Length: 419
Ligand SMILES: *[C@@H]1O[C@H](CO)[C@@H](O)[C@H](O)[C@H]1NC(C)=O
Ligand SMILES: *[C@@H]1O[C@H](CO)[C@@H](O)[C@H](O)[C@H]1NC(C)=O
Ligand SMILES: *[C@@H]1O[C@H](CO)[C@@H](O)[C@H](O)[C@H]1NC(C)=O
Image 1 (cartoon, rainbow, N blue to C red):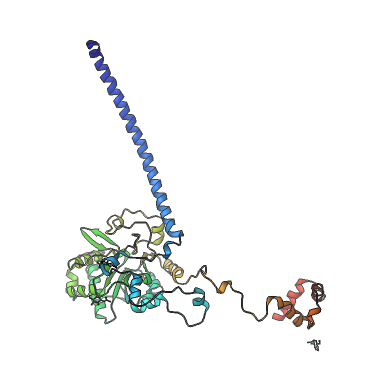
Image 2 (tube, rainbow, N blue to C red):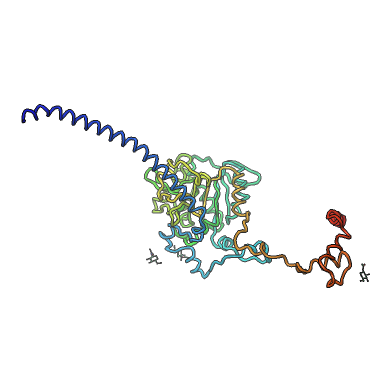
């Protein structure tokens, strides 16, 4: 018995070994195939999830009625836009779009008009492409309280400011811009800095800035962390308060300091953050309550229908964007062509869809004759018949027929009258 077992032992071991190996291979193979399929499945799921997420935001009216609350308000102001308005004894009321468009000449004051009067935004555009600069001047540039164009090109229509000094870095240029604006003796509260391929929605920016105090330190945009330094990326545009500008001017109040405090081109956004960090100023969280972004260094189209999110813009975001594109109160988008700038401007500011609470469009026109009396007037005017009570439908038909045997005659007659 013992011997027998002993003899079988190696066979058992070999069998066990082979079995184990096969099992392992099958397991691994299954895992491999499963791996592929679950990977594909989850990818598909993810894809459809984000699509349905997108549609949730875009086809539902529910979200539009929610007040947008920005994360940056929590940090500094601890108030919302509506609370801020209430504190100023102001109340928002829906307006009748019909009346606003077609009603009496005396218009109600729009929220955006009031905001423009009370929240002063200075826009700074860095120009490379004159066509884009012109389209900005014709479109969203008008919504700024003051706009400056800076660049190394010249144009007959856009007043592009060009420094006479030799510039060694883009930070030096930005620093000179700070000084130029500081010395210009204009009202200064908020400043937004953008490249010429950017669309800014000033109304939404003012909404975001309303509850914030411009004398305090605010530095807003789309923040990423690179080389350990969080900074607001220039592609998405960034905003500083005059409180921040004042401190920057204290540090860099002449050309010498501007020149020596930065290197390279296309790094000015990074240097700005670095210098601000040295005095304890960091980028704010500009996402809304659903963690959707507001400053976008990408075109809306790409954000909506897919953009490869492998760049540092996404992977190193200081405040990662959730719930896909985009906050309904977004502030900037990338727009690479001037035609697109005009098109978006048209859709945003000129295009009307009268689908809500329309009154004028669904009301009868005011006329002196009621529908029932039209035939009486016609008989009197056409045939000088005034004893109307005696006329039956048949007689009415005969009267008309006696004069006009064919409909074409009536048309012909009216055309002649019109001639
Ligand atoms: C923010 O406001 C809430 C009430 O509105 C209050 O409870 C809270 O303490 C405030 N937080 C800060 C940091 O001021
Ligand atoms: C803004 O902040 C300053 C201090 O930085 C303060 O004196 C001023 O009252 C604040 N303004 C408002 C409207 O809260
Ligand atoms: C209309 O009819 C009245 C009588 O019913 C007559 O006095 C008048 O002259 C007529 N007018 C015309 C324009 O034919």
